Image 1 (cartoon, rainbow, N blue to C red):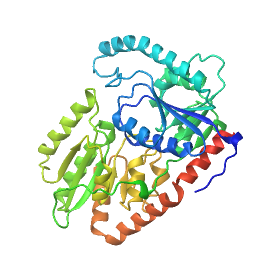
Image 2 (tube, rainbow, N blue to C red):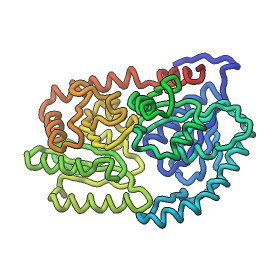
Image 3 (cartoon, rainbow, N blue to C red):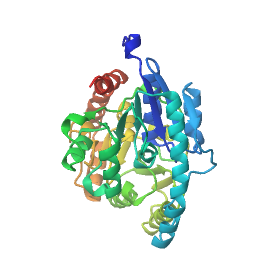
Image 4 (cartoon, helix red, strand yellow):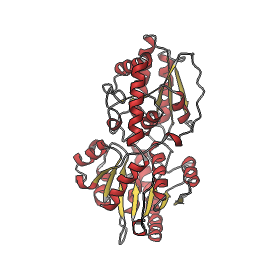
Length: 393
């Protein structure tokens, strides 16, 4: 890939982050920053520097990293289920956030960036009341961003502080427009990029039978990530006598909700007598080894932007069965590059998985089509060309 730039085209680009975990969205952000750094001056600002996998990855790639307020753990205010505690935490958080804002703005005045790229309202607040602002703010919308997911405060921040929106999927673009946040002229789709060359080759060791097929569900342990649907599917497949093993791999997030949900998943595995059919993989740093080991990926998530896990499965020729939410339909044409069951239908998930396990020709047809899609369309060159159109607009 060769893209020529003259000196006038070289931009100063700053990514502002408040990283809690190094999941798919953050991995994609770091990869994009590295690609941009080949032809532009790129720096990353992280509020806390508390996520070691993130800071290690940034440093390893030779990217400039500034940490505003070094902490061992991120500042999280929604750690309690009780409203009163949340209110108290928020009140205590406000002066902290104002201090962060002051430090960020001081640093930006030194850097004098042309563009700032960020992806959430928390970091966006650090740009409020910036004097004599000369940079453009690009909001990288990595989620679905349907109207019901956006608070009134966030809408106010977006409308007043964002210049252009970089949307990870066409569904995100349509959601932001239909939500009345901006005009179509300010919305640009920039897909993630992937190459199998950059993926680790390690294969996870999974205890299974000789002909047992591995079905992977990769996602943080939260209700909206769909693990309960996956367990219902596993129950159906077991009753049908399908030779499979389900791997539920993901992070258990700090706070209360994720840990409680993880324990619920454990209880359901026992209740459904699925101990020999389901394996839980908690907080594994190298989940890609499970992608290499699996045969099929399922993704019954409630909401998505452009899920990286689907792209990773496709580039490894592992068929995907997923809910048609957010940018999933940018990847999957039902029956051609994957399967789109009725939303959260464990029965239809089971039918699709069984079909892939028992019909090799269908398996190969889906796997090859999906591979060719991401191999030709979701490339670094296409991503950079799309983003350059934003810079040029």
